[in-house]
Structure formats: C-alpha cells, structure tokens
Amino acid sequence: MQGAVESEWWVQRCIIRGEPVPGHLTRLVKRRQGELQAQRTVLRARDSTVSGSLFRPALVIRWGLLFVAPLVFFLFWYSRLSMLPYSPPLPVEKPVISMPEIRPGVIPLPQLPEKPSEMILPEIAKLPPFPPGADLSRGPTWEQRISLTFDGGAEANATEEILDTLKSNGVLATMFLAGQYVRRYPDLVRRMIQDGHEIGNHTFSHPRLTSFATNRRHDTLPGVTKAFVQHELREAARAFEQVTGRPMSPYWRAPYGEHNREIRQWAAEIGYLHVGWTRDPAVGEDLDTRDWVEDPDSPIYYRAEQVRERILTFGDGSAAQANGGIILLHLGTQRTHDRVHRELPVIIDGLRRKGYALVPVSELHRALALGEDGKGSAFAAER
Image 1 (cartoon, rainbow, N blue to C red):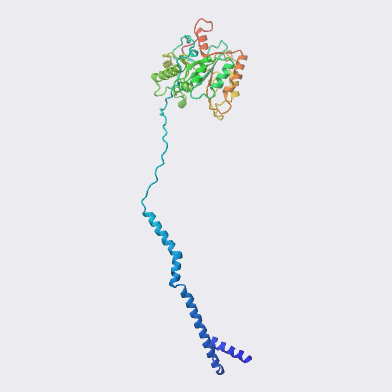
Image 2 (tube, rainbow, N blue to C red):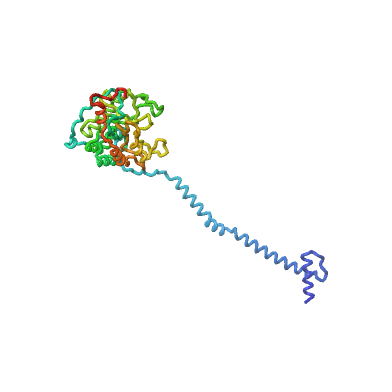
C-alpha cells in the first residue's frame, strides 16, 4: 500500500512539475497522463456543448419572441397613431348670457309715482337776499343757536342711524346732497323730506373745484368755469325734484370745502348761497368733525369721543361761545369702528344742556338778515 501511494506521489510530481521520471515509473506516468488527457477532452466537449446551446437557433427565436417582438409591436402601433389625421376637440358651447348695457356715469332714475299726496309739501318760504359771493359759515353770535349739517356725496352707510337719532331727539338739520347721492338713495332722500329736514345742494358729481389739494390754495382749477359750476348745481337740483317732487333749498356747499369768491359768485347768479362751517382762527378751533378721516394714524384724525368734546367745548371762555355755530358731519363713513355719528345723542343732549337750540341753516340766515336789533342785515358782503 505504501508503495502505491509513493508511486502516485511521484506521478503527480512528474506530471505537474515536469520533473524527470524515474525509470520504474515511466509506464505509470504515461498511463496517468493519458487518463488526464481523456478527462480534459471530456471537459472541453461539455463546455462547448453548454456554451453553444445558448446560441442555438431555437433559443434565439424564443428570446426574440420574449423581448424583441413586444418592442416591434409597440413601434408599429405608435407609428400608426402618428399617421392618423389630427382632429381638434370640438369647442364647448357656453351658455349665452345677455349682459346689461353699461354706460359709465349714468345712474338710472327710480320709478316715481305722480307726486303722491304725501309728497306734496308747502313751498319753501322766500329767503332773505344775500350778497353775491358770500360764504355763510356762522350764524348770529348773539343768539344761542347751532346748526347740524350733513354732507351726502357717495356713501349712505350711516344715514339711517343719523335720521333715527335726529327724529327721536326732535332735531331738524340741513343736508347737502350730491345729485348722484339723490339718485342712488331716493328712499332715504324722501324720508329726509318727510322728517322735515332742509335739503341743500352739493353739486351733481361731487367734483374738485380748486387747487387746494395740491398747493393749499383755492385757485380755480382749469375746466372749472361758470357754465360747469352752474350745470353741476342745476343737475343736482333736477335729480332732487324728480325724486321728491319739490325744489331744493337755495343753499349749497362745495365738495371738499373747495371754493373761492369767483366760484361762489357763479353759484349766486342762479340763486345759491354757499354754506361753510364755523372756524375760529383766533383759538385755532373749528366745527369740522373730521368724521371722514378713517386712518387713526392721521394727524387730523379724531376719535368719536374727541369729536364730542371738541363740539361741546367749542368757544368756551369766549364772549360768543358757540353761538351761530355750523357743524359739519357726513351721511356716510369709511370707518369700520369708532364712528362719530354714534356720539350724536350725547352731543345733542350736551348742547341743549348748555342752552343751545338746534335749527336748520335757513334760520341762522334769517336771523343774520334781521340783525341783532331786528332792523337790518348783519350779513356782510365780504364774508
């Protein structure tokens, strides 16, 4: 056994390492080499069979059907789609909506009855004459009378509350209404007449008349002519008469307080006296409530309680006090809170406690025309 193992060892050394073969092992080595050669031949044949089988025609067809055929089908289908004629989608029919005709600046007049009996009121008494170009900004300082006046330009979101307050307190005021306001809110305008308030003119479209907004001077603006001013006043009066069936009072107030002697004279030619509001330059006070200022950070903004105190303390310590005062307020507001008109009940009560009578502007005008002794006008032409 040991001899066989030793012989095998020598055979491996001679075959693998190529060492000289001992003579007694020559035959054994050749036989083992032949066996190894046969094994190599078998292995090569097996390898060639396995590798060649991967590329046999049958397998190629199978692989082609599995991978290539779907790709060819997709390309064929896609090319057919691209050759089809393009047909755009049909437009979707939208419903036809007839829009109303819009004409800028034209506000349709309300349908009014033929002067119903409840709208037929006594004619306005003939007012005393006034100097052309005059500005009525204060009544007689020898009488404890004050006027509440309200401007109506575009908004009316405070009007109903104001009218309710005035009615519940038995106060008659003077309202200056723009023609556009009259056309937009005819029911409110009719209520003012029914409640007995005096209605003055605030022009039709509420335009700017002077250059005050740009240079702090009241120079007549280009385009503001006598014809323009008189047309604005006549159109506002016409709108009011169409809504109420009666004429306006012969008082007017310039929009934004922008006016001068020339403009006031043009208005006076067709019978209108300008009405401002009371200022006292000596003490730097006035009766403009600034209720139109909505920005709390503005230097001219007054809180509602500040407005109340300014009115109730106006003229304290002076001989005239607040006699003949004309207070400026508005029928609409852009304030979302702190609304001045909600202080009206306290203001009215406070003025009456101090002895003031609340009257329309026309009563202040008549008192000025009579004078302090009742014998002549105290209304100076240079006002």
